Length: 139
Length: 406
Image 1 (cartoon, each protein chain N blue to C red):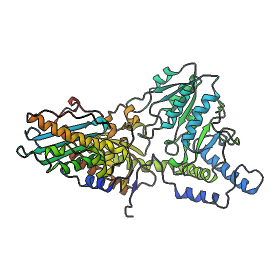
Image 2: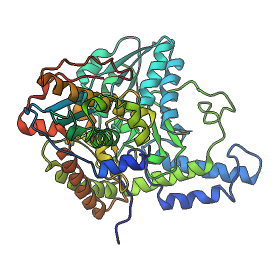
Image 3: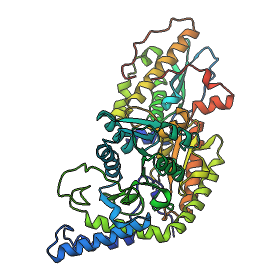
Image 4: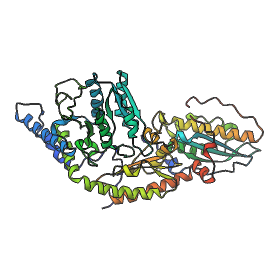
């Protein structure tokens, strides 16, 4: 199976690889997937408490090229968005942007889940209620 | 000679056809295009003569009589013909088959088919070293057992089974022994008489021959073995496999066998030196593990897991330049990693992190040096990107994390 150029580009030049201080109150961390399934994504966001804007985003991913590309793309999309805007990112956005084939849709779902998990972590840390998301259909 | 890309290290999937094999085949596409079954004119005679000669070349490589060679389209057909053919032919003797859980899919699925037809199949586990337990094999034999089907050497890890001990057990209990010997024939000495094998499938394209042609060895003496044909037709190949013979393919297969017989020692020495160099260098990487016991391995195969990086992601780092395969099955719908590696007792995480290297007589030291460098760099790069590697370095107990299995 050949990867799309965009996947290859993110794989070769991943954006925002790294680690934010997960103990910090304005950092939200989402860790999704499982080693046994062959993908684990960790996505972190740093939020400006006053404006609610995501000022920084970092990822580390164990997985195939599509999983790495999806998480790299997620960090790019998240920076500059408000937390509310970030909640609207859908897995199909990744599928379209990266031209993912059907067998790789789970990578996009994982990226969406990682965003939601990071936002919830941030909300809980800041005394807000956890948002109950619907179970992803693809899992 | 300058290094040319891409480098091919996936020789357990298929091998490059040796140019000497191609040369031998060419006349049988053009001048000598006859049907080997045409008994009444020179075109048929030439084709038949070529097939007879190839049959001798193939038989010689495995210590068989030429009459014991049934040409097939490849090992999948050979596996099916042996298992289903024995099941049907010996139905009055019993209906039980013993095999193991690291066999090729063609064997496992043929056994599943037999189960649907009313047969019973025992799937033996393998030990951590990749070999079956002989005690378990013997204990699994019942009065109704008609066939033991154990592969000679495994395609993913290169582990060689103790065929002579297995055949001694089979003989003691009067059970036929079939072996899928695709990866072994041409690479290590295989002798159907010394090894005590009654039926054996192998194929040309794993030993520098063409695709689409293989053979099933069927013993004719002590005991005389028969299989029920699985395709109806003209009764070719002593009635066991109908269909016009693939003459150019068979000629190429014969030539490939002849070359393997004369060059096996040299090839094995060449590939094992390079394989050991590759394996030793890649074992220097932290948290890398060689899969399968190195004491019982084919000379040209190495399977290594690089913990905390995923195999498909890893291959993407160099697959424009180096062709290997992985036990990660990220592209398959099931997301299940290699059942062979799991059968050795590897966790799914290590199975997902594995690469298989298969070398050939054409592999060069420069290619291996490049591969060592490229794989090492990619592993290190991906570990910097891996949350699991970070946790490992921080001493986080990953077993304690509640992973969201999907």
